[in-house]
Image (cartoon, rainbow, N blue to C red; front, side, top):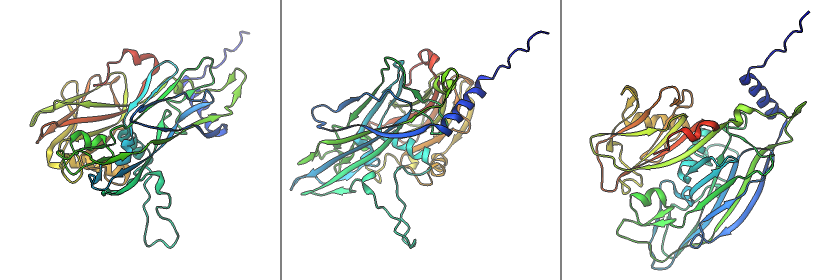
Length: 393
């Protein structure tokens, strides 16, 4: 009698089984790997080597700096993203030298908020609640709304830089227990944390002056204090062939990228292309047009419509900006800063593998001098096809 062939397990099923065993039995560790103080005027870019241990989920970054205005100096006002702009850029290069993260502090804050379903690190005090639940830890995210002459204030922000999609969904995680592992987390601290109020200053700075004509005077930004914490699964389960790993999860890259897309023209459709071979989970857009308006980026009336357009010019959606604002409100139970539009597509990702070329199309009713569009991307990609995909805009 011929032997019965061994039953072959579907790769997807095997991946889910391995993922479940790791989540259920591994130890989640959160450990400080670097603490330092940096003078951003001399060397704002800092490279950190992650610990080569376990299955890495991401990194927590805490940044703090003191902003002081001398007597007779220029009063300052916090920008829409305020202390989130202490981190000008964060990049992460994995074991294969793929750039998994290359984005800004404001985009990381927006993604952290959307992933958590609430403004990141916000504390919503309820005055009628009889227990002492309130904003008892303001140091997690803080910045005075204004800093007058002869005054100072601490700006501090906390970020989570995700490599895995979540603690339970391990797509994007990195197994670091390998020989000659080389990874790099690079932080660019904001050496221009205080600027004049311009289109760029409104999105890039922590504090701005009253107008574009007033340059910061008598302002001192102290050294940045930074703490980097690695979050990972340790003591992974083992089988007959060694450590049990979710191979499909490890072959998936969770990407966070940000692009500056200039050239928008009043009254014309302005297409912003999604790169190929990816599944886009969200798109975050800043229309940087009116930094003087309500301490935001633009008026609602500055945009006529926002659309998602396929290669055959079919609109998947085409809506006024208030509907996109409603999607953002549903995602975080609050509004993003004025002029920031969050487009969630987690339930049904925008798949440029399945549909080919896709464009986000913005039609602007008003375009001021220097107006531009900032776009933050959140996507999945497979490691072996990243090199074949076109670059982001």
